[in-house]
Length: 368
Image 1 (cartoon, rainbow, N blue to C red):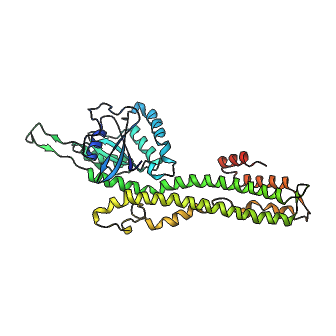
Image 2 (cartoon, rainbow, N blue to C red; image 1 turned 90 degrees about the horizontal axis):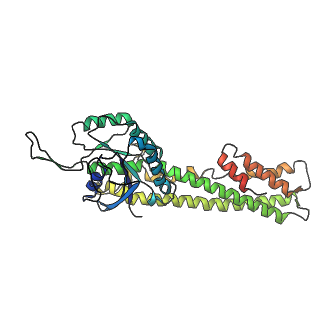
Image 3 (spheres, rainbow, N blue to C red; image 1 turned 45 degrees about the horizontal axis):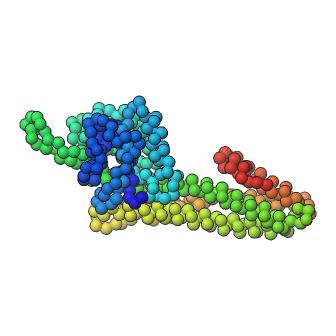
């Protein structure tokens, strides 16, 4: 789905629906007074902000006694958005709403903010009803408690009905600041999000490459063995050369795929986030992004970052098949191919004793 994906989260009555309407400049979400109006789960509101497509996911209102069910729904909501390599399907930002009429942030709200941080969403905290007398002091309290500087926002115009200001109106404010904060937040979390995705894909490729090379190894052994299913040192060296070539082929394919994933994400963020963020300056300059300032993304560093993920994609093939020299140290004329295959499997398993998930996967999939 085209556009930039944002979740709006907060307690019932905090003003999420008013915020959605304010961001889009028209009434899209139903508003109420302290009552849940968005049903169970997350509800999508699509619209345009500054000529950019925005997909706002308005969440069910939070309640202290329903935190666990809400978090369960949130994980279901995130399931197809956090592991996919298609960056357009990601949840790119989250806005956590707190009412400026509050005196303190509640413990369950802090817990949910921690979950958002754990998911690498780098949430923006919006103090709705930012025109309330207590809003500024509450914002300081929130920053002290969470380490995140909130944005004050007022989503609805109000007419004052008392005192000397009777009949005067309070105007909306905070939209531009919030949008810029959303974009900056998304950029600053980009590397962390990509690290999770690339690490996931790297492990997947590691498994596939190792299984592929192991099967090539078995096939080559069978092809080079004699009628007694044994093989000599010279033939084993031929097998070694062949599987090194096979390893390099599949490794290069995996590296290209990882590079494509990163490049696609790079292109999406340039179009959806970076250019709109800096278009007000009249031109887009990479120098506007300095990785040392708030960890913002430096575009020309992407190749160095990617290379760190490609290193150690799988074990060096010579390390796996060290068994060749071992078997012929005693000048044995031949060795049974079953013994060689078993030794190779044991070598692979031994190299992954500290990673139970991969160790168990290889134990099941490496069929001798």
